Length: 72
Image (cartoon, rainbow, N blue to C red; front, side, top):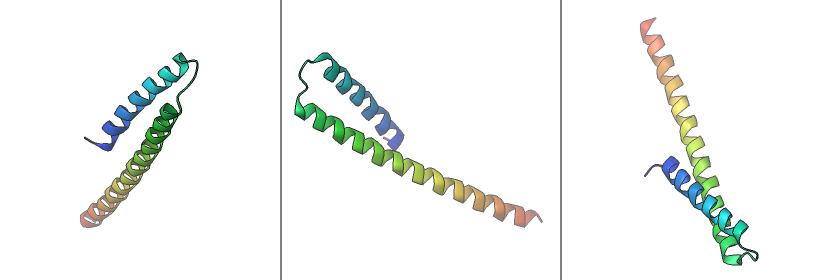
């Protein structure tokens, strides 16, 4: 499962938790804790995805520069 798939799954779980919180008159502290944990995990995974995309972009630029040097 990719990080993006994990984020998608966690977002669905967060939506469900938020719906549960809105439906209940008194919100359980455990639900808030679980929600905070899932949000923190989403943020970490999103940071990892951003870093990987940056690396891919840099590698692409390097390969493009290298291939342009070969053709010159």
